[in-house]
Length: 81
Image (cartoon, rainbow, N blue to C red):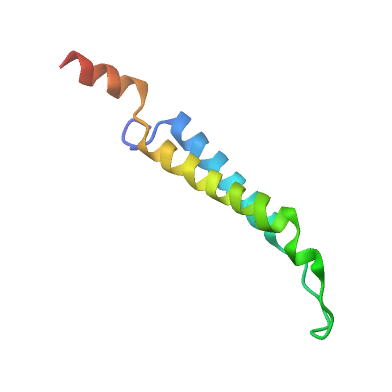
């Protein structure tokens, strides 16, 4: 796995970030009404307006940090030079 640009720890963080993002999208789903003439206030609850967007943003931040983070060996090599 030495040819791969991300270490196994970074790949785990990317997968964790993707799982957090998927959880946010799942929490955002639903709440609609099958009848267009009936209003369903479920679409404006805390879970859909606050919690799920925060989870999606948190997942994106985790993925970005996982991609940007250098593996420990690369940091040690750069400090020695």
